[in-house]
Each structure stands twice: as C-alpha cells, then as structure tokens.
Length: 105
Image (cartoon, rainbow, N blue to C red):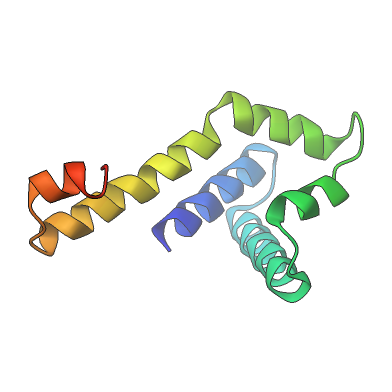
C-alpha cells in the first residue's frame, strides 16, 4: 500500500498547490483513489480502458496523463515494485545469486 499512500499524498499536494485546504485535498485525493479502485473491481475492465473512457481529446485528463508520462510515473512505479520485491527476498533469506539469476532482479 505504500505506493498508494504516496500517490494520495502527491494528489493532495497538487490540490494544495491549486488552492485547496490540506484537509479537503486529502479527502478528495483519497475519494478519487477509492472511486477509481471500485470502478476497476466492479467493471472488470482493464484500467487503461477506464482511463480512455474518461479522457476526452484536448481535455484536462489527457493533459494530466501527458505530464505523468513525462515525469516517468509508470517506470517509477514498476521500479518501486521490483525494488520492494527484491528487498523482501533479501529479508526472506533468498541468495543474491538466486535473486539475480532466477528472478532477474
């Protein structure tokens, strides 16, 4: 859940930067994440399909998507998952050799 906590924090920071009070920004950020997660679970659709459904040409969503891609969000999240997985293996006693060769981490 650390990734989601950091994402909610970042969303809230953006809201504060845009002029919202901190408490309202946190509430809106958390509700946004909750709503999106519920949509993924209830619809069974791929998250990319849902994103496309709420993205209009030249609109606010695609402007935000562009900025996230420029900032490397996808790669950063994938890297964080792999780093946490590797550390979990290390803490679990998996050898560095197995981590490198067997799991390619």
